[in-house]
Length: 303
Image (cartoon, rainbow, N blue to C red; front, side, top):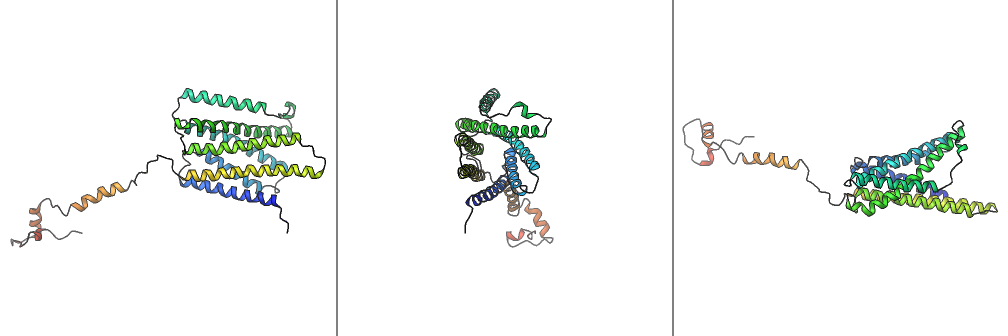
């Protein structure tokens, strides 16, 4: 029996990636991390939605509508990715001065935009005419691709800043912002390395037969699978670290324990220390007969 290994590998990676994303969402919800990282949670949900769309919509919708759907999801992913970076930067550098924060943000953005401009290719301006459907689709595709690349470049820069300078503020080693930044920057670095490798292959490869062309296509599929493996490893990394508490987190006792002790101590001491033994004697002994023992002076136990 002959097995298609590429298909099996793709299905294996899709299944485990989707399952790991669901586990990560459970961890974020169960450990109450959503309050601190709402945009990171939204990014995970959006990526899981894209994985579901690949399976549920592929082959069941017209190609043009399917392409538009994925382009819109790609552009939305880029926007959410920018918000995730802002969220991580605010958490990691919460103690930084406003002027320092703004100066570094502008510097990081300038470097990323410059690298994006130099990184081609760019379509011609005449191809982006908004009066045609093709021009609109090309514009959406350009926004999704270049926006995603800009997010990847910014992610690498923010990840380096968090790792190098986070300990001076609120993102030391094993803190949640640093662990999230390390995972995101690893994914971004792997994705950019794959893009560079594929561009080099496309420039240098000149297939002269169908066999050589199939090998090039095979190589592209393996590169994509390698990127999925890196993403899966990053999700497992997030599951492990987000489940654990940050170092130095104080584990306070439950709030109910103190009131219970405060309420139980007076109740236990009240029967042992009567305030007015003479009044108890008057209530418990209506006749004038004297008790034989002091213990009989106590009233009947009150339930």
